[in-house]
Length: 276
Image (spheres, rainbow, N blue to C red):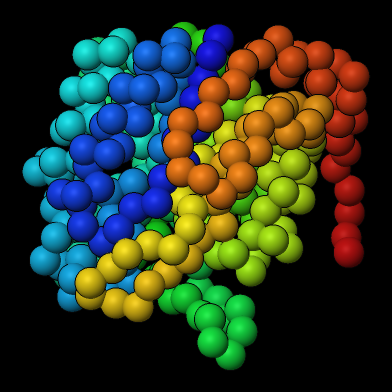
């Protein structure tokens, strides 16, 4: 089957971002993609909590979610919305970073809230405290589709192989890591981490990404790494989107899952052990 990764360069304005995203989903469907994936924070990339309070919505009222459900139904595709930043009813006012898998009838098949928060100091000039604005999820999610079970994850989750292992143990043949990755850590770790997850799991790893410098009226501009990747179950990169926004089509050959797991049956060879 044909699949598509959308590489986006969103601003902090969900209203302005939406028509561009819808147009790219339509373009992917025109190119015969039956499974389309968007990056993390498809609706709004911002580090200003005050600005997010003004422009974000709860899930039930979110216009980005509603519009993308409608286009999935119109074009009869499976659509992974990498994530949407959403208001919650949490007493501390933190948002949700939530991924959605939408079916060809426009309904929500599964939703996943990002578990691992990106709270890091990369350098003297670059630090992140995701948990100050977003509350972590607590539930791993396996989504069933007619073509393959999908293990849903988001960005920083790729650094935690126990999550991938739990999803593969539950039956996942595809792992999704929609991202808005830092250029510094992207250059150092992006390809290595995603290839490692694919090799360990004998599964497809699909990682649509944000790219470039993002416009924002409410906070300093942020940059992301790009390089949306599709990695096959043998660890081969079958698609690297580079740094340009757009639609990137590839063949999702699901028979490669069984082939990779037959060649290296590492899960069958795993043993319990004591210590340390």
